[in-house]
Amino acid sequence: MKLLINIYGAPKSGKTTMMCHLTTYLKMQNIKCEMASDYPKEILYEERFSLLKRQLYILAKQEKKIYDLYKFSDVVVTDCPILHNIVYNHEEYVTLHPYIKELYEQYNNLNIVMLRRQKVNYGCFKLFKPEELKQIEEDILKLFENIEFYPLVQEASSLEKGVKIVAEILKKEER
Image 1 (cartoon, helix red, strand yellow):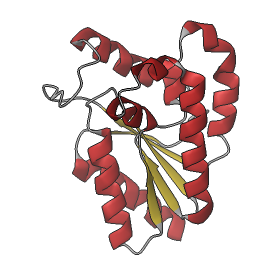
Image 2 (cartoon, rainbow, N blue to C red):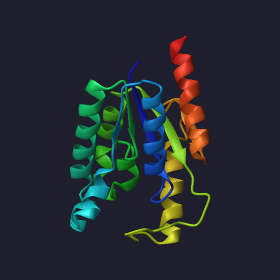
Image 3 (cartoon, rainbow, N blue to C red):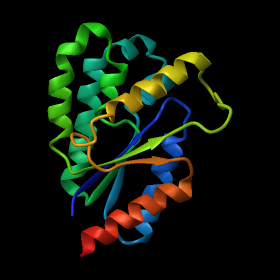
């Protein structure tokens, strides 16, 4: 079984924590699993802020990371899904949306949406105002309005729920 677990959510919604938790859980189940971490976060840590506006560059780097890991793993967990590029894609790149969806469709996807349930802890960076975070979350939920196109969409508000979702999918796959 090949599976790409996409964890969606606004910044600071717990995506990275969920990715680490799910990866640990899957490895403990003896499943060959890897993490495709958030490339834009690397850009932030390197203080190359101007690159955050170059969504095509980010898409290419993130998709390559996912592609390489997917070839050699049974499961890849990412906190920077390919479809995030539709949400963060600026108006001038709308023509790329069909291509982004095509890239997404190359994988066997499980989509988990993290909704913020608590006050945001900004850590090192505060790039978004609270109202911008709310808009990003709404835009992510809009991606999944057409359930037929985006199968296996689950909402997770806790680490335990995320593990439960993945465990149920794995049981179905074993049958």
